[in-house]
Length: 136
Image 1 (cartoon, helix red, strand yellow):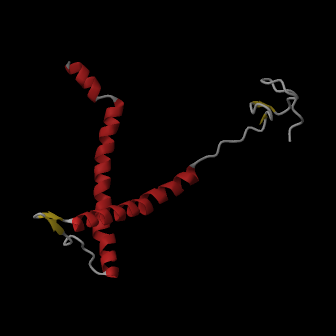
Image 2: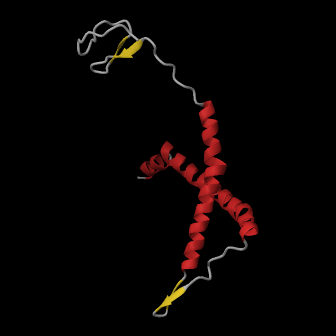
Image 3: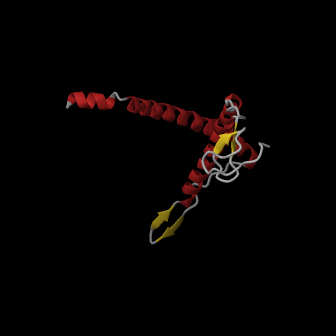
């Protein structure tokens, strides 16, 4: 049983998942710090000190703090925007520059009848046997 547990724990995908969780948690802390220490103070300097945590209503002595929910939604939107503009967009730009386009195979063309790939010089489709004109 110990041997099976050791094999389970040391499988490659399990280790990859553990590393991803740790890196994800550290990355989450960096993004949260960016939003808390840089972006939120800038928004507060521009629009005053936006804090909705004091907004509540009461029904039958139950207090509903909907202001705290509004604060959480705003924080989520700010974090999502920061993540998108600071991480996702730059990474997408870098990845698109590094992406190599596959060369187009100019020796093949599509049959106009069955849309199968056939040699460019073919006069008849090898799949549906329809005559094909000269390649365009």
